[in-house]
Amino acid sequence: MSSVLGKHALKWIPLALAGVVTLAGCARDEGFYDDRNLDYADVEPASPLVLPETRNTQRYRQALPVPEAASQRARDGVAEVRPPQPLTVGGSTEVDYVEGREIGDQRWLVVAADPGSVWTQLESFARQRGLDVQESRASDGVLVTSQAEFRLQSGLREGSSEVRCERGGQSMTSCLEALKTYLSANASASQSASATASSWSAQRLENNDPLSLRQRGDGWEVSIPYVADRVWAEIHHYLAKDFDQTDERELLAADADNYAFLVSYLAREQRDRSLLQVVLFTDTSDQAQEVRLIVEPRGDQSVLRAKATGEQPLSENAERELLERVSSYLR
Image (cartoon, rainbow, N blue to C red; front, side, top):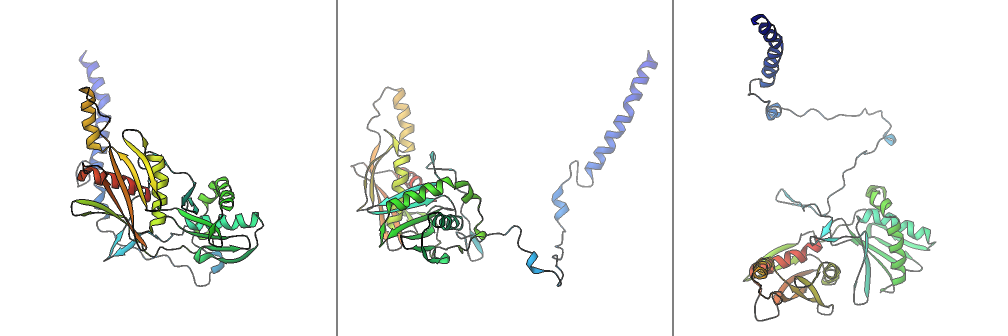
């Protein structure tokens, strides 16, 4: 019996030795596991690769060009970087590739693509329609034909564009509808197109300041670096989609002349209280407050404010929560 046990024990000795050697190799001098941070502590940069002077320069180009960040600006050596954009707006509202905007008699399209890609599609649209192009200023985003004038600029939301089709300063609805159909049908091609492949040199906003939520006295306001017309139209578009929940958030009225909205809103703190009242069989139908949202023009900029219409004012938390939700439509 002892000899049998001895034979089985001897079989495990090579495996045990192999395990000890392996673990010893992993340990190195830093411990049981390799701390790879130490591998980079003393790394020195190598000299950049240099192509020979005799090369044919026409055969070389940037294989992976890095576009300039139009929305990022360095201040005192620190770059302001906006966060990545979500696929939804306001927490639940999806963004279509091409959407219409309007205020008064002004109408335009918003495209979920950078202006460089959209300019390429705009040129293709003009060629397909056989439009007589009289002037093409890619750097300004202006394409003039005998039938209409197209104007392209960066949109309010990051990575989006705005396209207008006008004649004599008046929006052409039929032109915009035809362009919307064309862009929607070519959405995949436009999204994959590189801005560097177009002659459109990336248009820059004169004011690159991001939206900022700030406290003023006992209330809050949002500073927006865009004119009131564009801001109101953008907010109106998403309020109509997002504020459609009765007794929680609802768009009651829209006043384009005064850049205002009337909404019914139930803040998170009120919703939490309402859940308890439902359990206690208490009426919660009057919990939501009517709030007036106002876009105040400030020249090339705007300010967004929210004020309750009734005797009960908005709490500081509710006011900030509502403004954060609405201003997210513009990010």
